[in-house]
Image (cartoon, rainbow, N blue to C red; front, side):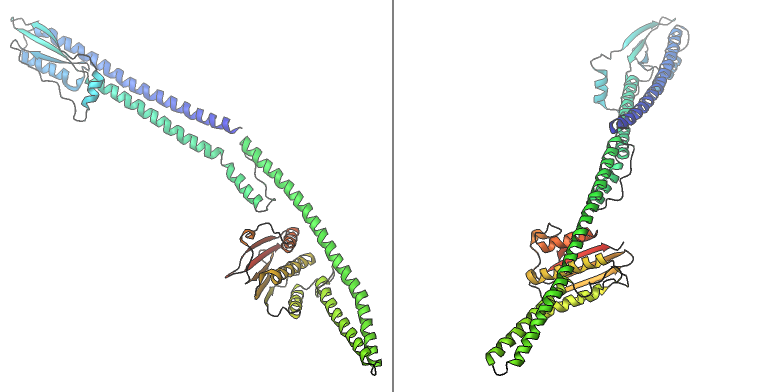
Length: 449
């Protein structure tokens, strides 16, 4: 059902209920007014009886008492009866004053410009005495009835408005309650969770939005899977190229350099009487040794120790990281201190995940050496068996990144781009922030399953 239709239907039902309630209350009020009119008519009949008996021999005092009884309680409703003797003296009680709570201005407004003059009716008694019956206008019962009716209508209108507002608020809240699920779904999509769909609902417009977001999540999941597969293939190709390059360098250049060293050593031994030739041979030997040492360092970067495993032999991540730090320190990085903490809790990491973790740490250390101007690097690698996560933390005390690069901003350096690609390829999460008290902190988490 459409949202507008649902709201109109509910408001229509509430309005119909309130209309029936107002009609019923109006009928009950009119019923009371009719009863008062009937009672007033009966009192008028009694008054006519009393007036007709004025010509009998009953004393005026008794007639005055009977008239006061009729006046009492304002049951005559529209007028007040007074009895005057032949001297003009009032024998009956005067009309009761208005209650203290009455508003004089409201009474004046209700009576308007209508005159309130009394009507005198002379009556001659059997003994010839002339008395006067005064009919004094008494609009107070009608004023009270009109004010009560106005208050009733105002109360009904206020109740109607209040109920409609409450019904509208409840209807809108109930009709828009699926928005919470939609907002939660959008938050999950922003966080990279494309698995949990948004449940369907009865509101057509909101259901269409939810289903559109579900289709978007499915499309993003498919594209992300293709992107990860492509990145996996790219990284596999890179590792294969590194492996092949290391193999070629070791087999070709390594053997040639070893042969040069052998030849140079032979020349040194055979040129004892030729100092110039002997110095040249020694220089060839030293240069070839230096080249061979640099070649070994390059081979260690292309195919580090501990990462030569295959499907049958799992790689040793901790040994590979310790060898990486040893090589960095051996190349003249002794002024940079390293703190390595590895706690894998005996978990056998997948080869691809171990390679990704190693390459990320390797690239992070390269960035520290080139740009950070740091004196300390902390590397923390651990496995959370409960959460099934592999966590990496690389923190330094250098100058950090410029402000626009924090946090999670698009990286412009190739090193950070490579780190992000490996994180994305393995379904991980990357965060970068300032280390305490200064420097850069990189956190990466990978799901183990």
